Length: 476
Image (cartoon, rainbow, N blue to C red; front, side, top):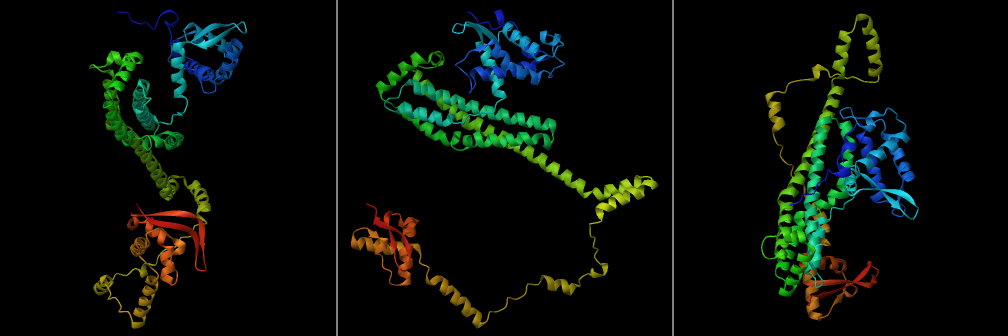
């Protein structure tokens, strides 16, 4: 059985540029190369010639030429003592070409030699570039899995939709794992520095990332919320017709060779559906709770550190007077007057008031009993009871329950056996007017579940009120 050997030919010392004293410079150059060749703003219309490559790396080298690591073995970048940017650019290009990160090819249109990242160089450069770049993923892989399964259920659905659903399900685990690693790294860094000032920028970055990515992952793309819908679609796919089952199973054997190799049982189709369900279950049962736990741990640590910093700051302010007294006591006599004058300049605006000790008197036993005794509630007079009754009657005079309005409308609809418009309701009395104005609200409440209301284009205008006209009828 043959084994693929990675470290051979030009890749024998593939990682040597990232292990030298100027490894930060090399990593920054690789990030710049990947962004230029394969990033969102990559210019695919023009190849990267030698002059363009030097022009691309020159600003990066100028920025990182002073970044050195003392615990690295010597190499050609270490041996040179010349910090000239042009020289360093040429040496970085030579090192990347020698160790298999870059490769040259003939650009026949311009009759020049162009440069590109080799296949392993592209893959590893992408990892460095991704670590330094904020994520732009919308974290919608859970919804992507659900939608792919829905597409597989349609009449035109095929095996490609099932493979898409499987890949989306795998990325759900990848998203949650990436989030857990992110929060664990934040906690480790937080414990190492243990300073609010150095951690505030990371916390602000977390808030921005939460609003951009994690808020969707915890709401619309939540694994728990979409789990039931995915399970239902998987059950429907397990009961498809025999001809569709055979067609999709044959397609999977053609396009998913990895599934044919790894599957257990007679049907690749059933095995793939089972794998999708297992991955979704794992996301809901282990990864999603782990993600929430990691986020909660980070927030608790940040909160504890902020509270500790606030308490220390408050303690320093509270004990400032004690510190001033101690400092004055320890100072030589010739400096005490000078120190007290300096402190007095800051205390001059303060106003100190002391309570007279004579004003503090102990209560007698009878006074303490009177203080805790509940006084008898005064009995209201006849005029006060009459005023309260009038106020209550006025507030209830024009208050009609929605149930009463609904019952009246239901009786009218059954009598007339046709829809009723708000504009046709009577308004002879004040209660009639209130009943007409309250009709739409009453129908839309729980008591009017057997009726429907429809807004009409015309309006109701009279001497009592003006509003949009509505049509009310019983549900059929």
